Picture 1 (cartoon, rainbow, N blue to C red):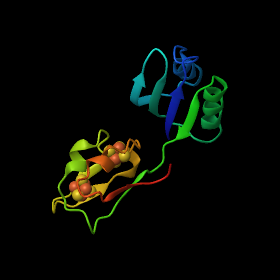
Picture 2: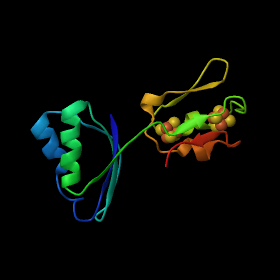
Picture 3: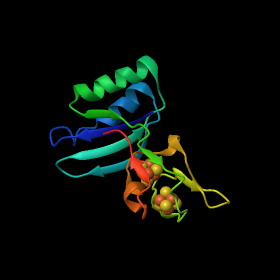
Picture 4: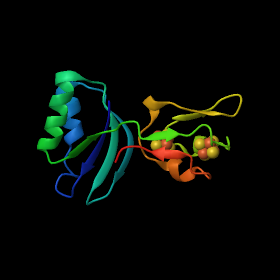
Length: 131
Ligand code: SF4
Ligand code: SF4
């Protein structure tokens, strides 16, 4: 499952993820991270589910980290798409591919919800879903 973590200046310097890895042996993959001395935002992929995932999320929250599930956040209007490929080249997660006939397909499991493609599309046919 992909999670978005937001750190505040109080917890950004704490080794919170390292402690989770040591405690659980989970191979957490950091897909994207923007960290400064005062705050941090991270998208992680965590190979877990059920009770173990709940415990990890509870621990992150107990340390003051804001945790949100990354869900499918875009929809492409294929009828209006002009197959320019701008979304394909701008996507940092390989979540939009171009088919042999130049049409595009969305690969939901790769999407990290950054929405860069929404702004990259010249004809505005990619819609952001959710908040
Ligand atoms: S939201 Fe980001 S990761 Fe998802 S398809 Fe668009 S550019 Fe790619
Ligand atoms: S950027 Fe927009 S018009 Fe271009 S291929 Fe992607 S969805 Fe289609």
